[in-house]
Amino acid sequence: MNLIKKNKNNKGFSLLELILAVAIFSLGSYAMATLLIDVNINTRYNTEKTEALFYAKEGLSATQSIRDKGWADFTTTEGSGLVVDSGGWILNGDASDLIDNKYTRTVSIEEVDTWLKKITSTISWPLTPTRTSSITLTTYLSDWKENITDGGVSTPYAFAINGYDSLIYRISTETKEIVGDPIYAPYLPVSLAVDSEGNVISVGQDGNWILKSNGADGTEIWSNYDCPQDYNEWQGYEYFQHVTIDANDDILVNTNFNNICKISSDGTYIGIYLVYGATKGMAVDSENNIYITGNDWGGAMKISLGDDGEVTNLWGTSFPDNKGDDYYGTDVALDANGKVWVTSDEGYIYAFDAANGDVLVDRAGDGGNYKAVTVDASGNVWVSNWGNVTRFDNDGTYVDTYSCWGDSSGIDADAEGNIWVINGDGAGIAEFSYPDYELNYYPSGGYDPEGPYIQFGDFTGFTLQYYTLGLR
Image 1 (cartoon, rainbow, N blue to C red):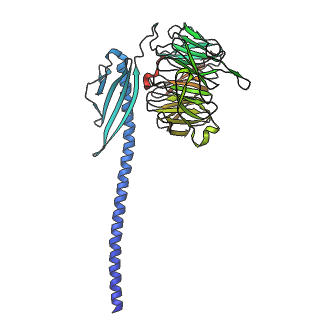
Image 2: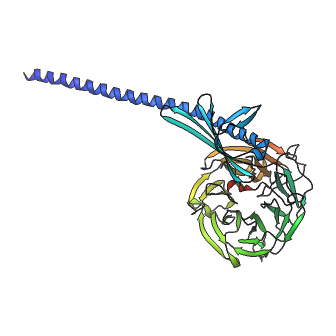
């Protein structure tokens, strides 16, 4: 009797095992099916995202072609589609346009200034019956066909230093040719900036001079030699390093002796301000706060300048993980998202919160000595290096490296999204043309080792002022 009961119990246990096995198999099959569905959706999303990105870029290019027909008719809109009419793109009013019966494109045009508009191209599409995806690209377009006048309005020129011959070249960003005679700027010019009227400010290391020239014809407006020049046995004479312009068009020049010299827009000496750290890179926001990095310390600092040489330290942050003890900062740039971008000589790029100095990005780049940094209108961060230009997105993610030549130094982005780079040890200018960033060499004829030695130095300015980023 006991044996029979035991056998019955065994059969009952086997049935339970079968039920459990079926349940486990069902759960596993469901999980596998869900995984396969997710993989399929993700694969399709990546494919459709690539297509959507193309259509979003097409939206920006189409809007640019509309701008090129005439600034007066380039009106703002909160949302419009695009259609082709008589062989050219036009806005079709408030309606969006449907592409391939899937992608919906909407373009908005927002006025930033009388000569500048913000363009947003958005693509949305149904990924699943319950899930919609979208992608948005942004750029800025200016009234670039506006001609410069004697008053000095914005122009499509770049200005570049030939330090050895004490000359400043004017280069058209349209024709890519040198325009007119160069500006004579004595005493080893090293840095340039352009004010809101298109006038060119240049500074020289020998004697600490500052020269303001008309951007249209190169004639001198004024020169100033009033900034004090100290001397010590260890460093020798104090010299200028970098010039920038504040929101009032006043001129700020930093030196290797931890000083910032301030000159008014009419050439009047205002004062000298002592700051820590042999300031090198420097940028100014719309409220005249100054962001600096130094060449004998690693980090960033935010200060404001008061009367009688008063300096208020708003925050100061060293490079993370004690990297600031061994490396120094080389350049500073601000973006429209409240980030302060700083490059360092060991090939790192950092972003600090402009409000409080918190470290937002701490990233090793692609090697080498990073020299200068700029931010384009779409928020991409561009860094010059030896023979290379490196692009990061606004989160600090590495995107790509573009080769050019020689000792790439000064770098800037124009209002059309093209990236300009100057070779610090040879002749020529490199331009990476938006949106594919195809490399071109200028002046025409390409890189010529025997040609004129054109050098931006470490920093430069374009007469298309970067109100684009909302910082000045």
